[in-house]
Length: 247
Image (tube, rainbow, N blue to C red):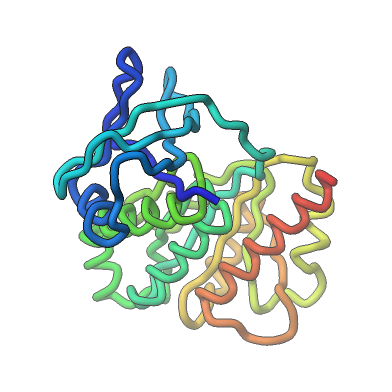
């Protein structure tokens, strides 16, 4: 299977695309790319991603040029999932974002929750660009057409209102409804919003805030999961159920 790259520059009139900067350096130095090699190249046509066959025409550490060929068929759609991710320790947060992108998340909203450590909340804004770079690399690695949106950090009351489709908050205190039960009610292909709390979980007041905005509380099971584990487990359930309903 060919590796996929999201083009940094595209000239459709000439049938050319380019990778520049760190992407070109990685392709030239790490992957030892050479003229004639072929890759899947994601371009934009009127704002929509289109995947085309790209053959390398020239390689330098600063720039890799491709001649664009035929348009390539794409696999079926996956549900649009927004992930509200309460900010926790940055190394684990980065891992969660990377894996969420690989699973197909469309939007990640870092949330400043009541139990988010103050020094993490204060430093989160400076991490946004790094999180976007991680998302971009993960999108290419997992053969996605474009990276998801990674917003700047938002306070919970603002983030809650950004929900799309059915909105589900994972809550340790929930003992009745499982995530699967709630997802069974989602229209096929419908958007889903998931909220995952920080270390220590959501406070009782925050759960009430979610409920007041129409969010459904759900459980992932009897065990207590770390925040990053809960996020990925929940996304995997969403994507697996979407795949089953599409069969």
